[in-house]
Image 1: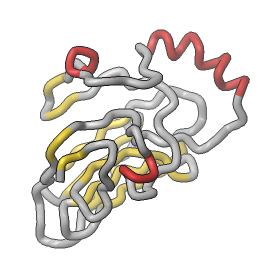
Image 2: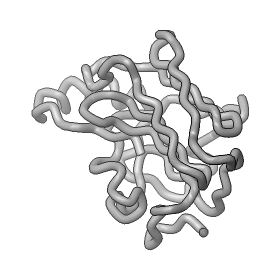
Image 3: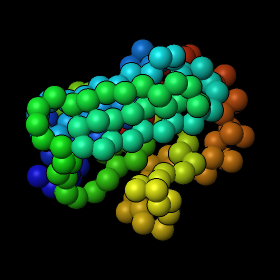
Length: 158
């Protein structure tokens, strides 16, 4: 299935990083049942966090801010992620449809670096489109103003 803004990923392979009640949730589906790896501590505290997620076959890991690594495994026997099309980082055009209700908000914040197979991706050079995407330096300057103007709410990295 090609990932496009008008298609649901329900029942398809995916990788997702998001928040649920302030806890970071790293989940992936390889076709035999989704894995969900949940952070030990809440991360919706207004501070910057360094997140490292890895997946090798059915096994995945989540590390937040150099804390103890949390391990997880997807069910079933399938070990390969089969996806085609676009990769969305920070959010998707139609959140409800494209995440099959897994997330309720797109990212509010910034993404400093993304490494894929240990190679740093140049997100701005390869981006097709972007909404509310700012360099992290700009986000840091405006974060205090933004935090004062909003009540704490559930934020999701999709």
